[in-house]
Length: 267
Length: 267
Image 1 (tube, rainbow over the protein chains, first blue to last red):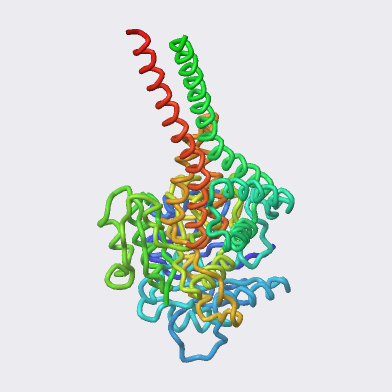
Image 2 (image 1 turned 180 degrees about the vertical axis):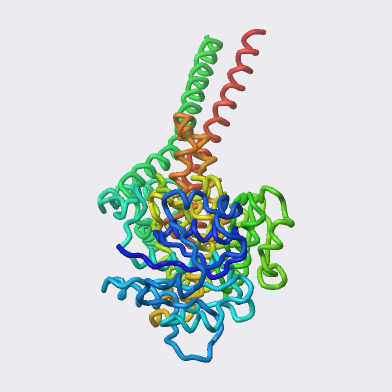
């Protein structure tokens, strides 16, 4: 599939070029075009931030002018936060991507222009574009980092492509427990709580049980979770109970010995 | 309006903290929480990339643990690209923001967890979360820069702010418990289960605890429910324990009488 070209015009910092390439690769963009990069190309400062994006993920071409870089494209959008004197359609990023995908669906080549870190796009560069994309920024703190601007665009590209979840994520939720399993858990819990005198006063017992059932019903427990919770409740209840039985056995034993001793001393 | 907190867990590079703060300010996020930043805080390497975001745009707080950082939050989403053994709802960024805005509309405090640059989030940290947000990344090049991940999230926040929620959506659901209350419940439960020998074999104890925490985190318990469950657990554990104490007292008593009798018969 064709993907939008990212065109960075006179980028100043190699770090931004590297970071832009990385996030392009993250979101499946491959075509990076540099117009007159300040420090030339290649640039040693780009490599570390690219995280390997230049190794077969993103292809970089270098151009002398914006017109040259955009020469083979059918439709170009300029990323700018400032209004311009020439009217053009203005898109939010999401709508820009919808428009670009329409163009791509018709086999047109598309791209986005980003200006320099300091000054953004010149009026001349904006003049080349078919439309403007502008980001929903805080008007009191509106200056986006260049690579962050590319990140948002690249993300919107990927978000709109029909993407599967990353490998290993199960789109389906695990099996929710059948209601009879959940009911078994609740009966067990209620019996334990009844025995412990938890439902008090008696007048409120039914309401308290309903609330408890509501809590567990809403939790969307899986079969495995119901089983774990039942085991956990049993452990809490049975641990002390076993110790109680042991203590009682000991007490009975002592009492028996007591009686025996007494019996012995009686004789 | 409440805004989501961005929680960076053990961030390694000051540059990423600065860049994250800048893009937060760009898109109107204000609450940045650092959990045990590797190089401490403040960090001179953060300032240049923040572009002034720390001057009244973004407030930074530093915390010792994730639990502490998320303590006052009602709903937390973990940003992770790796599937986990505990099932939780998985959102794309846009849907995550829709969910978070619903929560905020009900006056709930929300946040997003981001892990370290190298290893991402630990299973334990993911276990604290109510849900997972995962990005539509290229599976062959999936590692997003930390600040870029924050950028996408912050952008989605700003892109959706004007979106109205359906009438009456949020209205009547009760307050989810804050994370510190839930943590208190889990500590209590784990202590009881530890005492009962539930976590067996020891090698699996951590995993079992994470699963339990995952179950309860996902259940979306309210403050009232946390309190009820704690009471219920206590009742189950204390009922038999009280009886055990009584049995033991009786046993000791019998043993004492036994000893006295013996002593008497010895003389």
